[in-house]
Length: 88
Image (tube, rainbow, N blue to C red; front, side, top):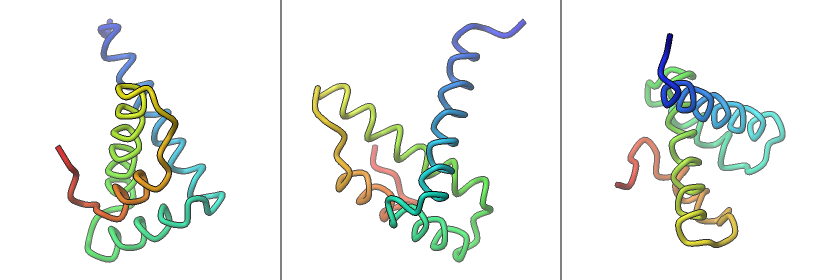
């Protein structure tokens, strides 16, 4: 049987990946599709690209919660455009 924390992490990852897929489908933000295009162009597989994008989304959500502020769409787009490099 898996550990509860592992289950929670898997659920969080799947939720973030679904959020990225939803952004791509909706075309909003436009930086999502541009980032996916860039990452696949430089050799990342689609699945790996989506996971990197999910990490950027997770970072923005974490900062939003830590700082008790609204979601910063501009900051999130900056994170996306900076991929594959991720800030600490």
